[in-house]
Image 1 (tube, one colour):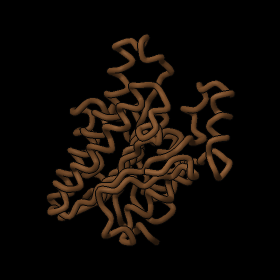
Image 2 (cartoon, rainbow, N blue to C red):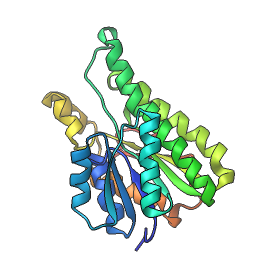
Image 3 (cartoon, helix red, strand yellow):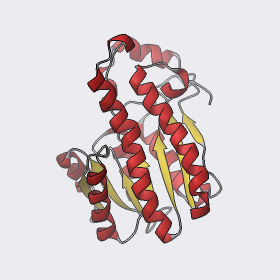
Image 4 (cartoon, helix red, strand yellow):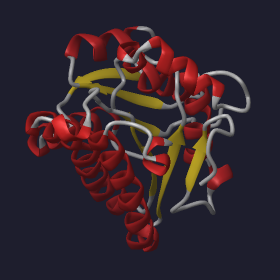
Length: 243
């Protein structure tokens, strides 16, 4: 199996893309830590698999929480090979009316949380001689079609990935970004139906993305098949936008 014996850290694992990523890696032989701020959701995802998947509660925006969770994972599985940062939040705010607390929450989870998990994961990977980090951005980062805090946070993820890829290459750590288009996840539930239909109309392949579409690309990027791929943005958006 493609990921036999790999140890994989997946944030946002309680639902949507993160949950699909956990399933993809587990089915391919990996040992997976399903990370979510909601302990019940993390455990529920883990319960769908055997002992090679564990649920771990963690607030990715808090450094001490990430360090503690990562220590638990390494103690359980002995190493860390792959980090997939799927945790994300958003809210529907007009720019001029965006409250400070909404800005800080979205940036805190989507960008700062990605940074913290990357930093702590890279420390473990550097000690063992390499690994793969996969961050999840959004087509909104490229088009600006979305709330300002969300677009800014996801654009920041792309810049972070590019810098990390250059700096960590000598340590054998590859870093890439998946850039999904509109994807059928619980986060989309709060978006008005007419907006959703407009999104679908803008996608040449004529449908919303599914979480499994993203998970399959994460699996590729973490595998030996992508051994010479780093610092790249991989668009998974049905042709909605070109990077």
